[in-house]
Image (cartoon, rainbow, N blue to C red; front, side, top):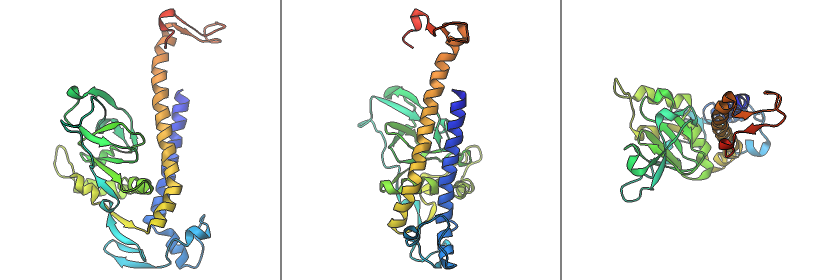
Length: 274
């Protein structure tokens, strides 16, 4: 199980790195545009996709950007903190994700609370496709793509909900790039608990292409992020199963063939429901 968890983690890291490489190539370095400016087809790109990109860079407030694209912010692509629980609309229980349980693209741990016992910061409603970014000590990189419905996030997160499903991967990769996180670190106020306001996260600069480019980008990168989410979810299940079985193996309550000279795996009667 530990080997499978390690393999899943390595796979998730590789797939996210590939998605980030696509984002940097298309929206930061503008490699397809530069290739067309040199009169060649962009590497690894078919002619139909290449046709979506211009062959000219123009000046903008963000520097040189592709002709026909716009200098914008994440607020143009996503709603900030769109939903919160209140005394009138809260559920009976919440599955709570906080900054301490979120790390570099993964919600590592959640806790379930009856509403009355939930932390006062358990207010942000999280939906499938949201991006969450910790606003306190942003250098800790407490961010993640939300791959499931039903979670409640801390008010210490800035929640970005894409305007439509084709913008999910773009918003996540733009909001959590090294440049974006470094910007938040530089803008954070406070000595003991340096933090930024959620609107500072939404103001992260981004170069906005036509919708056709965004949709093509989503076709390539969203399946990669979906695989990352699936790998992390499987790791959570494997870790829970491992933690249940390991004490029983050590105590001898669970016995395996070839390990304890048994011919069949057995459980004591009180543990047969495990």
